[in-house]
Image (tube, rainbow, N blue to C red):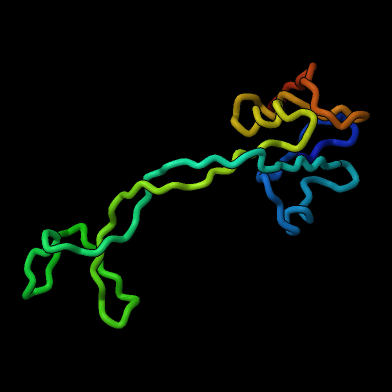
Length: 150
């Protein structure tokens, strides 16, 4: 995740979401470069877990899926793949599949806080960056927006 903050106040002015950033993300900037600074919080894979998940897979059509063999008509859930030389009927079925799941963790001293932001347990706008330490701190005086009367 990339955080942009005001150089004078430490107030967060924007973020670029993500755990892995491309070269294009690193070239992006929010706000005026003279007035904002950024902090890049890298994430790393802490561990990998094997999980079992139901996924949709293509399966061959069986006799029970055919309405009329002579006419070549199928039940409504049968789909036809036209990307082959001859159209091939198939159906979608759910199948349990073992997969690897990455457990990500921020590579930062304030790991718990960044994980709370990621899981939406805490709001980024309630924090600001300490200008000396570049660490997040709880905002004490939230400025209220005053609407101008016409």
